[in-house]
Amino acid sequence: MSSKTTENEHNITRYITIEFEVFGRVQGVFFRKYTKAKAEELGLTGWCRNTHRGTVQGEFEYASSAAAENENDSTINTDKESWDALAFQHWLCRVGSPRSRIDDCTFSEKLASTSRKYDAFRVIR
Image (cartoon, rainbow, N blue to C red; front, side, top):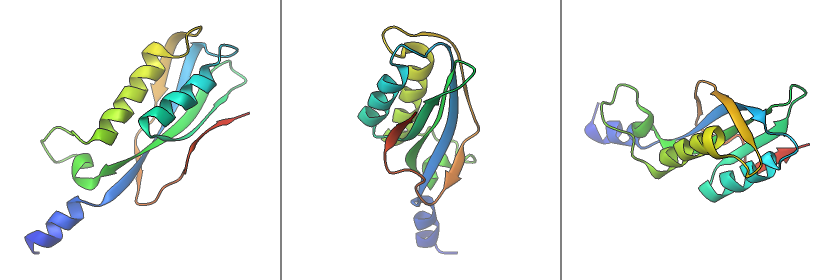
């Protein structure tokens, strides 16, 4: 295998989708509106919605190079999109909307694809 092939394989864009759920006082406090705004500010796509359990759940997606997502690579992932995804996770768990109270948040395993699932971030009603 040539080094050029290996280099190209590491530069493939992958779209990473992460599911989330936020617990606490997150309904009736514009949490979904602020979530959409924060996702758009960071260039993320996906969706969020209220649940019958009083939580907000959703998915967000970001682009990342295969090299950045390579688990066998000992380097630190420094691509901007991955940092934006971490910033969004922090926002969901620690900041939220001004009137919200976040008690807990959960995230799924990362799901990777070579194609986009979403073209924007939407609030599902």
